[in-house]
Length: 147
Image (cartoon, rainbow, N blue to C red):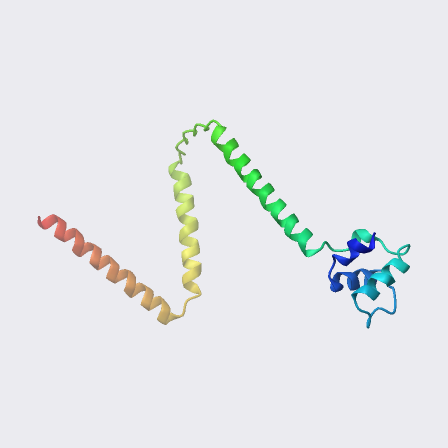
């Protein structure tokens, strides 16, 4: 790598490169001295590990944004061109009375087990709530029959 290319990089990138290759004696050096050290040890250094400069990073970000835009536009275009699939009509599931009874039994069993875990006060509060809902429903039905 040439000196002018190394000068484009910030000091922190040069230090990272030196640290990655275990080169000693860089801590108190300025940027030009770091570049001299890198050139002196260039046979030991893999320059592919050098981070891109800030200008290169900006250029790369700009390129990636443009590519993302192209990809999204391409996907949108493909979606518009795809023919819409017809939705299949769902078959009504038919259950026998026996299946319904079994399902209701399972629900009842779970409800009984849940109620066993409640304290007596919780059970009473739940019963009162259900009773109130039932009474409200009956009152509502009576208002319908009065008309």
